[in-house]
Image 1 (cartoon, rainbow, N blue to C red):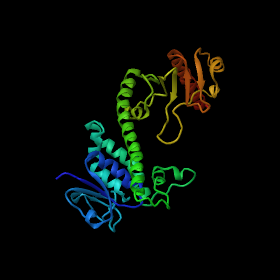
Image 2: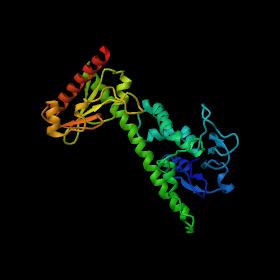
Image 3: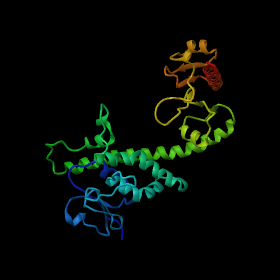
Image 4: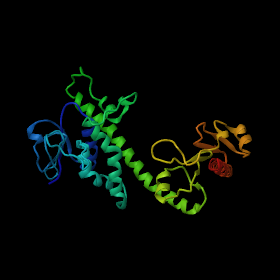
Length: 312
């Protein structure tokens, strides 16, 4: 029997049922969204999927709530929200429709769960409480700002707000999916470039793309800098040591910091050197030859500095 209804609760909405709706609506585009707490709607039936309401979790019956006693927990003991439960059961099918290749479905499913779904689960359950200046700028907080104001008594205020928030939630999920797909495409290109680079500490790419995951996957610990073209110039980029933080395998030379054009050309001795960030993690040049020369000089200076530290 086809799924005709996607049932979630009425009233104020949160990120978890909005994002669950994004996933389910992609799989069942013909289904009507029904926001209700009426027993006739939140009782399992073959024509519906119920989520974030109903007081039960039973995938076989198509109900995915997490508010009841004995609510479902992840294997590590952390709680699910409805979004986590929906992603657990429907995520791979969503990824297939999003164009993720079959051999990457499992890894992408896990990665999206870790990076995107889990923080929503933890926030919705009160386990994670963002604080500080950015607390009100998290995705759950921003989606909740789209609720009607307290004195908007329009009969359709809640439904209009939900529909508007749903479109924004969908944009974030689809953008995340596009990024994951792009990272997979980039991985293949970067691995080819690593093979072509051989033992060189400089990796040249055909254009800008995510490169660190593929470098780590390849075990290319010898690489120190990446060179690639941009719209109107060429870029020399450092490689971060870890996913978190800004420590790099090798910085650009300290004497380049904050310099541009003729000042940078004079210090480097390289015609076409045009910019170096004050924090020494990226530089630019007007030509490929200049960018490669800057990268080669940066490698030389890094090795000299490393040797001085070793001797000292």
